[in-house]
Image (tube, rainbow, N blue to C red):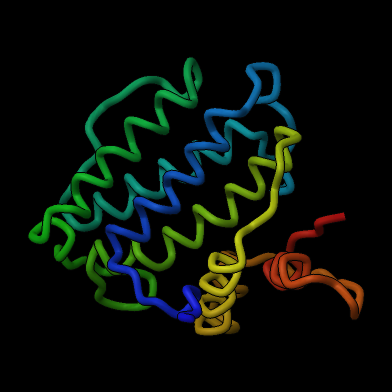
Length: 190
């Protein structure tokens, strides 16, 4: 039997899978919960989706690419997210656009590599944040926990120094992997 947490995914495939999970949570947010506070201090549920889509637009812009204008996130967060997700997927499925290089935080990078790593980590973590804000199930699959853990350990202190991770939150010694990982990233699952 193969451990699927160790199977390499192409950036476009990883984004497609994780964006699908994120989308299911976005689509499940009740209309009256979009302004509910999230685990990210000062952000409501809607702000999480805005952050993800704005970050995508920023990364693409640095590579000379852009997200086409779409629905207003203020008026319809689910439609705005779906529009941005589909545009990004189209870029990642195009080898030329996915291979576009730009100056990233840690040096030169390719769009596909960034979306297959940091941007995919954002989908996992902010899906949890969104689920918490909306009162939805927030379990993170083991495969995704392993992916985020490996990325976080690779980033090391740079993750905290850049603001990508908050100050570590203490968790009980017997905490499960999700609680331990969220604590490492600066989130309390209590």
